[in-house]
Length: 379
Image (cartoon, rainbow, N blue to C red; front, side, top):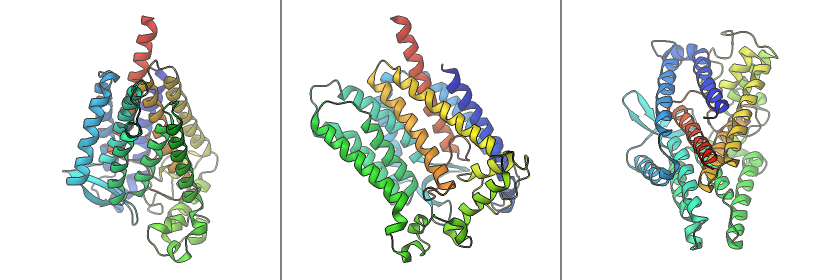
């Protein structure tokens, strides 16, 4: 296996569990009324253990089986969302499609992100070598992706839907082809993606003021100058994140000494954990975490470049894009670059399904790297 990917991914996951303990110890008791300040920490450790066991299982399956497995998993997750899901509020204006089994809250959308990457890679790996390349065969996986994203959108989880749409568009753009009409279609997909990013970034310039100040979902586009709207929901959380990072400075205020985690910063252990990290450990540690992300991303794309099959290359690129999008959208929202969407930060934010899927995704990269080494030695 690739040791860099192994040690960084496991190290970040374990670091994230202790950061969650630090960020959630106060809110666990006072905001969520749990009996113990260790509530979220224990649950995260359990999910990391499940993720590691699941990753060991993933390593046993060759990538040649991914098409059947991923399609089956995707259809099961879609069926769960349609027939058995519930709607759970995370914050006042952000919701997610979930299924609750006893004390466990399961998010099928997180599994779909990874399973559809596997399916698209397996499908287009075969499709690129086929002689029958009709327009319908080219977009068949995209239809399934659009249906899954549409169900999530109807559930009110706009952040996850946006990530899935961008993810599948970028994975499709990675598929090599010589057909002019497919290149044109890929160009349209990329244009729509860039247009969507521009709407996300500059939507506040064209949306009516009544919509931005109305307190609904569109109010999240009003993300500029957050501290000027401190008492407004659209500015309160981001401004408190700024205050936390400003308190931290270069070296931080010390472990456990965060002020903002005392219920000033909502969701300090989920999508806004980064400001707490900077407040307690300083900007230097925050930069080191981003560097660790970039190193992990570099080795993931390096595995993708060195693969001997198009299927594995697309899957690796897809997982790298999946990882990168979560980092960009989370930190973009925290830093006030784009609207807040409730997207977790990889490995560090609290989230059982998310950490399992993230560990599983990098286990897939490790499996592909192992197959690369086997192929290299056999030749």
